[in-house]
Image (cartoon, rainbow, N blue to C red):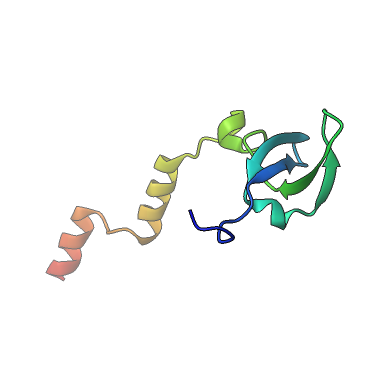
Amino acid sequence: MKKDIHPTYEPVVFRDKSADFAILTRSTAAGRATGTVTWEDGREYPVIDMEISSASHPFYTGSARVVDTAGRVERFNRRYGRKAAGAEKKESAA
């Protein structure tokens, strides 16, 4: 490998403030850190705040809503869909 062309790969804490969840891992994104945090081992690590993680995402937490797609399709067809087959024949005869 060539020297001095690769980003540094170092420990960083990713934190989801909305779910009070943090994970310590290694990443090349340490340069985008917004500050530092003291981890459970007593050391300070750069921290990157996230808006959504597996602890707060509706798909992973099971709080996802089921969308009534059949009702939406029927409502769309009533508003913008084709007219009923009988109505089309009556209009074409006129």
